Length: 158
Length: 289
Image (tube, chains in turn red, orange):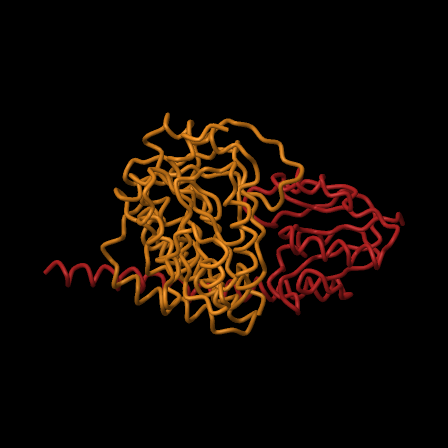
């Protein structure tokens, strides 16, 4: 296993600094690779703490399609903007095939916490199910919302 | 640097409870190299001594001291109070980084149909590759944009009911619908320090989600409006469950009321224009709760 860690997804510069510092203190000699969108790559390359910025190209915004560069990593880190890690199912599903010795979330983008890939993928499936279930109610609500505005218009017009 | 071009620019800064950040910004703006027509600070009723500080330390700054926080309406007042034909809008934590604003003002004179010139807003001034080209854009940030005052008068200022966040998105839609253009000019750089204070809270999530819903309601193309709103509602519902918060439901409720009350603002954009604006429809933006 090579001495290399992978940070999956990028966050803003203020949060990226503490995240890189946290990674550097846990894995002092590791080369830090960051998987990022093409438009952030140049900006990341200029940061001396980042060893490699890898482009993740997806059709839409955010993660969705599977990604794996075939390399082995010491650790895979997903920075999250909450404490528990909910809401990042698509990210975990995208990198599920990456070979890493350990998996981590960076709570609030800097507090490293070890997690199990299996557990995160289970959460991803739950999120998907929730999305499906909420979709039914959301569709009804959207039509109701639009109808209400139309009714108002007719009432004003009459 | 020639004096004349910058005399055609007023600077308008919105401030709220970030006195130290505003101090840095005013230090960067009020310099002899930048002979602006005037510098205005619209303070949203800060309670940290911002108003007194500006009065004492920067007596030449025109101060619009409001007695309470009225959100982006304070920016509107500053834009309309400005006397120059161009208004450089800054946040209290953003400031021009390079001395290229004279070239910029000359560029503006060549483009009378430009409603706003989006400047290159960066997190830091280092490692910049600047070009002086300008290109068509479909968005900007109030932290670094030059408004054509004639456009503000014609289009109207930001929608005051939005209060905070996505106001630029709504204004862009209105400008494009009226035939104005927005251009991005990378020759002038504004460094946005993005101070953490006031930035991450449930308020952030509330206003962002509510205003995006209103954006979809008003400007999404008619054929896709229902599908887009439904998809965004789903995101908000999922986020409410995952983060165990009622903030997104409150945002829906508020959008429900404002949407119906401001029904006359519904003006769907053509599909290609809406696609170009490309609003970020991920729920949970900025919410750390």
